[in-house]
Each structure stands twice: as C-alpha cells, then as structure tokens.
Amino acid sequence: MGNRTLQRLAFCLQSGMISNLLNCRFGRLVVMAQAESAPNYERQWLCQCDCGATVIVRAHKLKSKRKQSCGCLSRDTASAHAKRSFTKHGGRNTREYSTWTSMVRRCEDSNLGSWKHYGGRGITVCERWREDFAAFYTDMGQRPRGTSIDRIDVNGHYEPGNCRWADATTQNRNKRRTSVKSRTLGYAEMCSDQDVNLGSGSKG
Ligand SMILES: [Zn+2]
Picture 1 (tube, protein in one colour):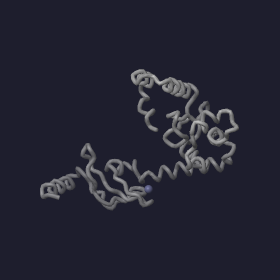
Picture 2 (cartoon, helix red, strand yellow; picture 1 turned 90 degrees about the horizontal axis):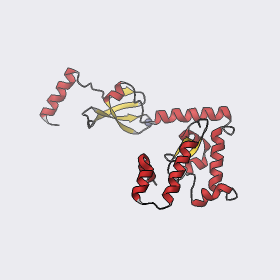
Picture 3 (cartoon, protein in one colour; picture 1 turned 180 degrees about the horizontal axis):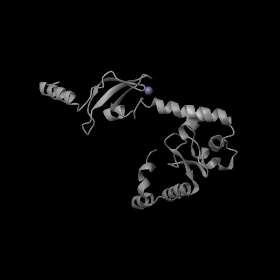
Picture 4 (cartoon, protein in one colour; picture 1 turned 30 degrees about the vertical axis):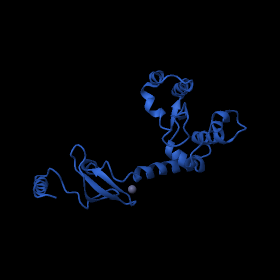
C-alpha cells in the first residue's frame, strides 16, 4: 500500500468515513480482512463464516445486519422450516409430496401414459430430489394452491433452477412456446414468440 493510500485511509478512519470492522462479529460472520472495494467504491470485507466458508460482504450489509452468514443461515432456516412442516404433516400427505411422486413416476414409470412426454424424452429428476423428498421440498418450498410444478425450459430436467410453481395459464404459455419452437421456425420468428423469455430457453 502506497504512502498516499495509507494517509487517505488514516484520514477516512479518523473522519469516520469508514469504520474499521476488522475482527468484528456479525451473526455467523467474523471480519478477517479488508477486500477490494465494490464497483461503487463501497468498502468490502472478507469474512469467515462459522460454517467454514469465506465470503466478501459490503460494509453496509454487515452494519445493517442484512448479511449475517455466507448464505448458510437462510439455507438452514429454510431446511428447518421444511423439516418442521415435513414432520407436522408427516410429509406424505402434503400436496408437495404428491407432486414429487407424480414427477418421479412421469420420468420413470413407462407404464404411465404420460411417461412418453417425460422419461420417454429423456427428462429426469435430479439426484438430489430423486433421493430425498425433503430436499425437493427445501428447494421448491410450499406449493401455492392452483399451481403445479413447471419446468422453465421444457426440454430441461426436474432440478433446482429449472422448476417453479406455476398456474395453468403460465404453464400453457410455456408449452405453446415450445410446440412453436419445435416446428423449426426461423430465428426471428422464434425471437418474437419468445420475447422476454429468450434467455431462459438456452439454459440447457
Ligand atoms: Zn456459512
């Protein structure tokens, strides 16, 4: 660090423009070192989380307690919620569980009429969800009434990032878009049909 930088740093510290958060604890995070500033020049700190991960956090997020872990805190809270709900309802009687079993059957039970649209086309349920309903529940959350599971990329698998709870209108729009796409239209035509959603189609 150059002399000028040091002087400036000392000035900032004295004038309270920045505060030194070194070694301070915020929830699960302990501030280890100063990190490179954010694009807007805001100070950022390298923090060590109790879970062992390190993460760079903007100063204001620490001070306002908006960031209190590497992300493991909200994950733990969500999975605790899922576990509670799972235990309370016995898991198997939930709407989410029936979604889960139907999803698995569509992909794996070739006796099922709809299998040809799913398993028959190579659509699978990712390992994490296939092996553990609780993991599926943790990732998807509660199923709102009137919705069912929808794959955003209809040629993609049942996996986190490609699934959402959607009502029939959204799902039909998503389906129609695909059937149009599969009729090998010109690129411009595809674009105008997909419109805002162009990005999600290429995800894999
Ligand atoms: Zn953590």
